[in-house]
View 1 (cartoon, rainbow over the protein chains, first blue to last red):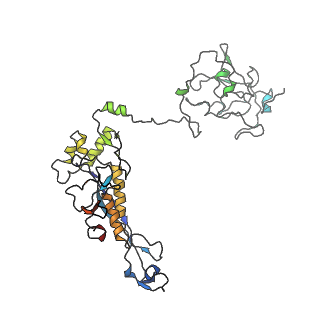
View 2: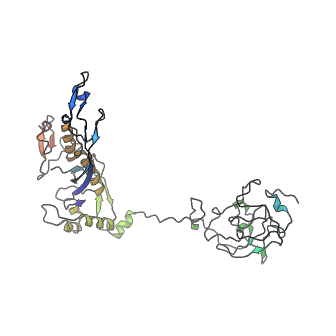
View 3: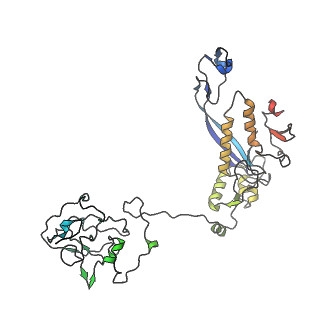
Length: 87
Length: 321
């Protein structure tokens, strides 16, 4: 954590990121095929990895986790609340 | 001889057995009455563990006049059984106060010693008369704190350190004060300033100032040592400083949102991230303009004519147009 002379704080956080994906090559996903329609095969590449497994469809698996360090600059706005400097 | 004693074998005229080590036990200094074991309330048919039937003795009662505790208290060792460690003197039923038989209380210089009122192992209602000598009264406040665990040792409580504002101010009139960060999302005026410990925060802040700010000619350490809180209050921005705890909380949530996404609704993710840089409760007239020199933040006009700040990556999305 670094406090700048301007009163801002630079907070460096290291987060553990776990990405979820569908390991099966093909699967039947009613959300993609549509309700009422017959289930069809959905290729694996049709669905991008997600930050969390789907609560509706099974078959999600976690990939190998990795660590990410993100430095965030936080300062107090004129109104009194805290804001994050977005670059 | 008849008696109503719960220990009928005590009402015998047999001589007392030789005293045991348990009877000679003396409490350590500072042990209160409640911390000592008592023989009261024991059922006659249920002897305490370790107690045996009265053993026949071959000699009369002996008197233990050794000092115990804070005062010279004589202990009778006339009980017909091994005394428990807590029973220092006599049992009401076992020690009738007679000079003969069981429960002999010696008299030293015309004074019954120990006096019934001085019996530390006796209950409070047993004190029938005040002590013959002006013993120093027991000050309740001076008594050591009792051990809540009941293990018999005095409990020592650590001193309570209370931060008093008047002491802080008197110790260091120039102690810096920092505004207490209000809850997130509040648009009201900032909370009144809260005093912080000058020594701790001074070292903490000095340790946190490592490098000067980008674009600032004055080093951060020099700004801190300038003895004025205006530098730390962000004079350039006119905004108060940020506490570390609040900054970590915001940064943690922001990091979690950065690392999370919804592939089905990417605009939600972008809007969620940009919300960290915007006023959570903006007003049309009171929304401050964006500060100059902040890259990646731009003003756009929406249908409600309220300026909205979009992120750099948000401009490419349809939500920001």
